[in-house]
Amino acid sequence: DVTEIEEKEAQAKQEEQIMKEQELSNLLHEKRYLKALGLAISLDRPHTVLMVVKAILKETNGRKHLEENIARLRKDQKEAVLTFLVTWNTNTRNCHEAQAVIETLLKHEAPDSLLQYSGIKSAVESLLPYT
Image (cartoon, rainbow, N blue to C red; front, side, top):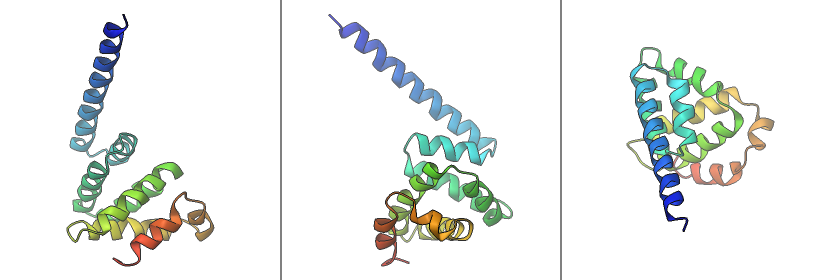
């Protein structure tokens, strides 16, 4: 019978998830946005990433801080943010944040580099009608 082992594994995963949620909350409270962005992306939480972006933009010199944080993300993290912002851009409440991130990506990434992103073609096609 492996039921007990499976229950322990599920409980361990749930505890790990709770720990990550707490860590994310602490990072936001401490205004450690780069780590918060990375953690929210790794948890695959588009809404949380959006909340981090909004928090950065509310800071003094928010655009500059956003550029610094987005530029320091790894390529796979930038790809994830790109897929998230396609959805954000379709909502008028979140389109300004999406446009700020798009602007940052376009400023700091070479066109050849952007073309290497997975899903860039569908992302651009989805962004065009709303941009």
